[in-house]
Length: 347
Image 1 (cartoon, rainbow, N blue to C red):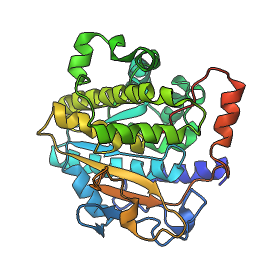
Image 2 (tube, one colour):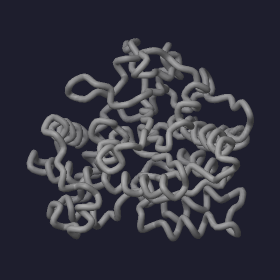
Image 3 (cartoon, rainbow, N blue to C red):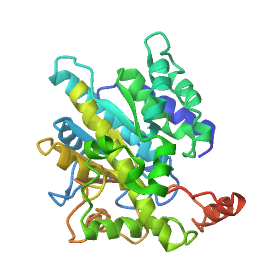
């Protein structure tokens, strides 16, 4: 779909986010072009119940949890639009239950913690407006961030603005992530390591699975020795996201994490850190996944740990975004054009 057409869809989306019964993409309304006719497109699958659930059932389950983690495939526009709807539904239900209390807070992987002053400035009461989402993306210099185009993320920020939800940068500062990847955990002050719980190691099968995932996402462009340090940097990012999420929950009563599917995995992502730092806090994980041709069993889309246990509570299935036939081609080109540069992790 061309950018102007997308803008029309998202403008409509902004209008129905606060409506009593929003209609979400179905059939021809999908933004992603591939496999729209797949029989599972639009299905929300409960891993625990092993059955599909309705959108209302999902919204109720999310609203009952103080911590919600919503995954994504970064460049899939439908994932962002559907999550904007989920955020609106959770906010309405929680605010009704809490007597109008503002919440939940939204924690974004895509915004660094050191960018928080920029976010606060744009979201201040005298800077909000119809173009607030566009202004926020511009002030965050989104077009230089390495994330997919800001226009596909706009529904998330429009929902936050309309509902007056707190928006928090959850990602660690980029320079610190690089230092951890190069120097290990010694790059962090001892107090921070202890507070984030990074002295506790991932179980061996989970660590091996994380390294394998990172290796697969880098298209053979890096030597094998690079992946363990990169996995350590990813663990630091997960721990940092969990830290911001817990602070947001305590301050605002509830919090929603907006991040890639790898970060929200219940077995080794942010929830791994949540369980150790706040054992009593229940969380719900929703992975947003793309349907595949010939794959008609919804249970096969559920991410699982090495023992076969589900690593998400729900999976919401959508069509696929359009990408090059060779997903590694663009990465190889960028890597060759910038010697010494590290390809993005793709999580």
